Image (cartoon, rainbow, N blue to C red; front, side, top):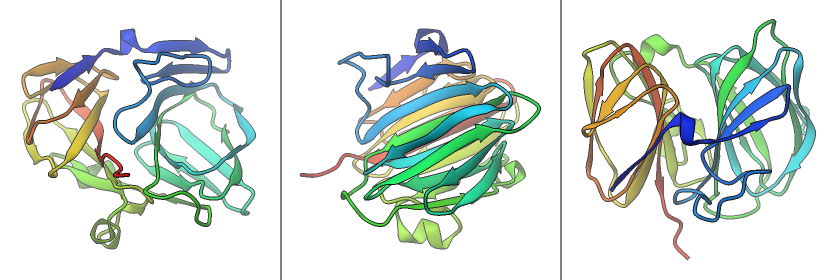
Length: 238
């Protein structure tokens, strides 16, 4: 099963300082048919105006990944963490038993990012935050694991999350193609960050998405210079 969802089909909420496009139900946007995909509960495509952002607010029991597409985001939280994550890089926050944080665009340009929420494998745990630079050259023409809930990936340099999931990223030149064998039992939600791609015969443009289930292999070809990210996630067992 491959379900395509174009950027034009996403729910758009105009907050003046924030242009938010929601892949799944979130805030003002409610669609009982779009409550998530497996353990992925949120995928927001946000554009944040300069010198604005999200003031302090709470979270708990959620793994929150931010992939910065353009500009940068500055994080502060009730644990005393503070850091700036720039385009191409990733930050993660395990909300655990509870954390309060803010996210601001302190740059002189708009910041564009994907914010992804994934259910943790278990509730609770100490909240934590981390960020890491991932030079795009390291994933040119190949997939790189940017965040993961599996020890072997974290040992190899991925940011740690407490979920049975992996976040992959790649940049491809026009005409380049890569293949990925999907882990047994996993589903994939893939979004083109830039450029145009052909994935298993489906063409997608920048910020379009594919929900992929019951398929064993991804065949990804760049029709023009492109960047992509996807989450490979396992449904939680009860």
